[in-house]
Image (cartoon, rainbow, N blue to C red):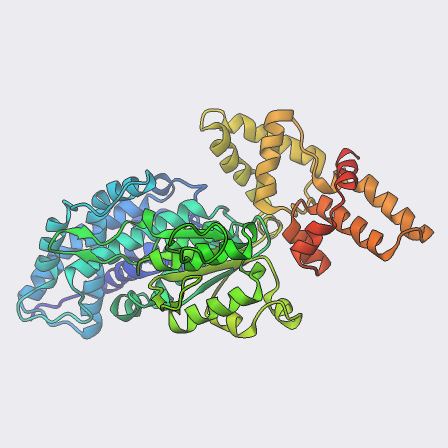
Length: 514
């Protein structure tokens, strides 16, 4: 009887199977590539991110596709000819074919991604599905061979497109070549597919909306980018009869910035309202929770700012998937996924009575922590010029990006120095690039406010301030340092609304002039 896999083929096929469903942002990916390609492997960076070009930076991708094309027909022929294979070898063969089918569909998924990026729709007929289905049947429906864990063609096609969307959103959206940034991309991938992709494809793909994702991190660390990467990569079923997807990713992500809205508007945005339920409610309105379909997601930015009554209503949504419009008693259903983010220390907020503990435990099943810019630079100092380059190219384009990058790097090295902490994170770095572009220099808020800080110290030494004056001066001083109500509130241990109310406009103006 013909042997299905030789001793030399077995590790190669199993490595390709791991690459088919594994996390591409974990360092194990590089080892699987090395095992699969052997002497043809080209050493590449263990960190895969937007600072590299996908094709040019990893020539192994094309070679792996060619290898799968070479192996698949040979192994299928052996199985069809009656070769004996263990259950593990059959699983490896199935993974190899998954890799092959995905590789062959890259040209199909590309136009769909481009359409979504332009704000179009990917719900039209997909011409490449017919070939995919034929390839699926040829390689996986072999007479007298029962492959373990086989899924139906429409589901595998939908999963393949989800993998492609997840890779693009994570690769393009989350910046940095440091280890903390690489760990963040790997964590995002796990939020989408879990750590066990086979179980995900078998049983979890339609249930991930039940799991809330909570994103924690300082202001300016890219929490919304993480939310978009997770939200835009949700599983969307594929309808075989019409050869089309049920929904378009571009239409399924809804972001609500809690800190930018009043309590009434937040309720209306989330839950909808009935005509006449409050001043200005001139007609019935459907909220984001109601309009969000099962493949969709609602992102609540700055969830730590929610007032207590809305926290109670949101808790019911997470517990029972039910809610009511403002001014109504009719129950409605939330079918999508909730993603939330905050720069607040929620356990501390709970201890201070500002955030519900039961809501926190409904939010924290899946937690992602975004690293600060100073953490990324501390791990890999060479990442700062790379991030500046990314921002410069986005601001002025590819042609002028390198020159602006050199200008900003020179300024940072000369005027800020390697020890600058970048308290505003990537958001501050972007404004530094813009300031240098326009004025040739950048002065951080903390440096502008030093004169005011000296005056405050002198007043404290003299004992000339009342308690209210002291709080007003100090809130204004910390806000001038940080440029953010939320960050100032975090440092002071106050509510951001209290900080905002205490800001002295005249004092703030003098601090900025100092």
